[in-house]
Length: 264
Image 1 (cartoon, one colour):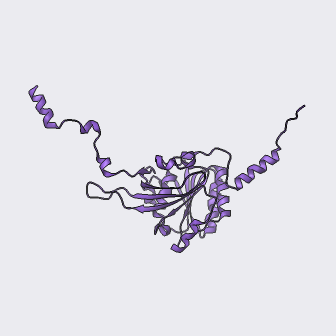
Image 2 (image 1 turned 135 degrees about the vertical axis):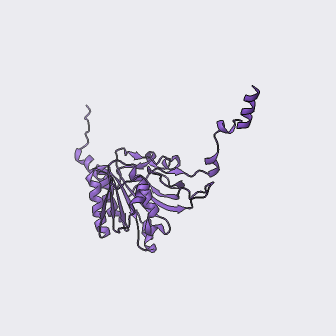
Image 3 (image 1 turned 120 degrees about the vertical axis):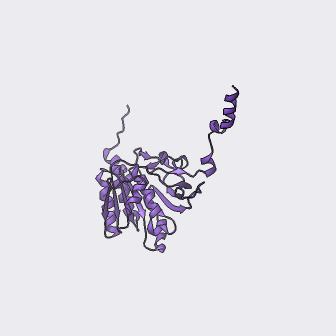
């Protein structure tokens, strides 16, 4: 005679709670693809995980200003659904720059906090709300404990959380190497724009460094900055971009065509 062994509900609940506190989740996360094959191939699920915390910082001098990093985050937030909560400690967010990558002011709720402690409190409350498409917060220090709370809040609501690591001094940027519970960690550096066949300034270019990806691979990518819909694009040489399709390149010139018609 065999007896069926039933798992205790209390034990399963405890295991699930421990898994969430460790930053893991058994449920399948939905993702937001970048649309760039090289990037999506390095990320688990083929895109940026929703219902998760991600970190972004600027490279070089942008670690203090977060201009490129902010546009990168705005482009991601622009491709989510719902309102976007943007939390800052300094009143230097340039709204037209966010609109340039697809994030309009009508969708964005700006909140100014007086300290990193207040930023983290607003960040967690925004993620727990559940009715926001994304929550973006500028914060200098992010401890393991604070990041675990944010990760748990994001998993519970399914909202996308992005922490822009921004410092007031270059030496403070060393804190970016400390471990956190974020699912991915990115660094965005500005590259020279691509040359044009005519005088002018080409589309901005970025160097994206995927420093950490849980269950994924680290890599570097040279991309063209977000367009008006928040989409990245791989860098394409000018020669390839200006090349004519084969059907057009193989066509006879206009004079030859008219000469054949005249003889006919």
